Image (cartoon, rainbow, N blue to C red; front, top):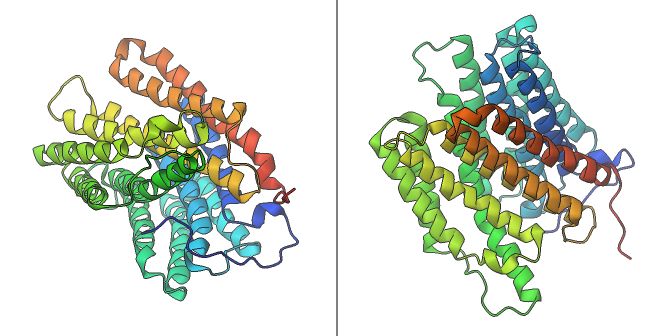
Length: 402
């Protein structure tokens, strides 16, 4: 799979709102807004200030909406922007794009009100978005004969399966279903996507930035170590999804963590400290081997809880790299310079603080309330800050050169 541009997409003339010109616009904005709003709703429920009319238990709703609301929108925005680059075909835009975005929005409303409308209708409405997204991805890859990126369609299909499993478990439709199977499958798939896509764009962007500054030592090209790291991460994800309490899972996680750490060490992240738009990618990716290692060790070290490890992977790796990719892609695709200003640097620091504080909350139960509050505030600052800083860019036409 290649995340590097291989073709220049053509765009149809579009006279409507700029928000519907390209796929990243509605979905990156929706991902950021929902990341903030859903966390506010979760914190209100956690404090007993609000009860949503959802059939899902409060914690399950929080996990579901972070994965299929926030992350689902971010993945859609990335794929709808990247696939035309891979295939050279017309991107989805205009009213078809609006329909897909409305399907995502309808899912958020249906899940939040599933106690009113019923678990089955809510599940059907929610699953429709990923089903439509899968159809779009398959159509573009097959029509463009872009076989090397078929794994992207497989990833969307697995996300759809993970969502269905979460609904089935919450509704009790499959009584023998292992607890947490759906969300573990989803997290494992997203982590593998980070390994696939991050392993292409991070060394590529780093290489370009260093080369422009005359650096002699550059990140190496994709090679055997990268393949081993991806295979190890996929294997660890399978063990964790199906056998989360096994020694085999722990060993697989530690092996994947080592391979990903060695991979990251070759990308020359320390040489990019002058440009936040580049170093955030390295810092975000570093959460992946850390989280994998913590998850493996949690099997044997009582003080390392699975919750701590999972939040290193979710709030840390997934949250950070999502924000990093959304900022860079928005700047590049709206015609702005690829450099981070003070506001962008601030939201990078905020997401890092949010993840670190969330881990600390799991590690220090005596200070959990204050650390959870700090993590929540920092998370809101990161994604609320993105919406405030980048929302106007996403809503406005592309800047013209000069």
